[in-house]
Length: 262
Image (cartoon, rainbow, N blue to C red):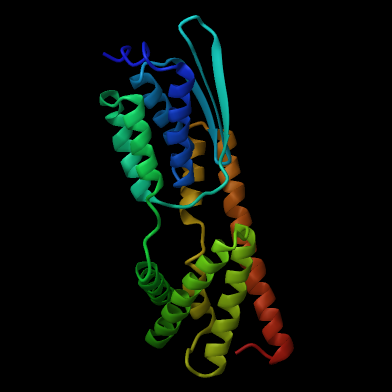
């Protein structure tokens, strides 16, 4: 049942489509083991022989063999990464159903999945406001602190989306976000609108904390993907460092220009 595709499709084409699915998985924020299982499942269901893959957060290496035993390999670079659970879910479903697809129909489905974008405004705007406000309350902030944190977090979402459209590195985005969180929180407390500098700024900062990256790093390490797990952990550490640097710079600027911190 699975070998009839192989009689008509070139192994290189099968490998290309399988790697495209793995690339979409990694770009959507999936674990590396999940990307490897996706590539192996699609290639096997399309009739490829002895498909092997090695995925990292920044790249994919995969190979298969043709019926003469010649090895075919490919390398694909992962240049963008985000969190899109809808893409991951659809790719998982497509992998399970890939045995019922031809190569062309599978490629069309992948193109459709690739076009799935992030939520349009104003959904991220209100989502960011809720996240910042409730985290502020969770860490002991007053209700007015939560309102200030929610409004500042919603504005931060708009600013980060604009900076991301300019193709700024994530490290720069995190520094800018931390700087913004420190300055806007200090300003709100200085103006006696918010009461607690730390609680207000924490609510804003939680929007940028790389929680999913940390969880994926631990999951990769537990499953034995040591290189991928260490790479994700380093990515999370750099993101946290960028946030800390931004907050530190913001507090130093406020102290230098205004004086004592509120």
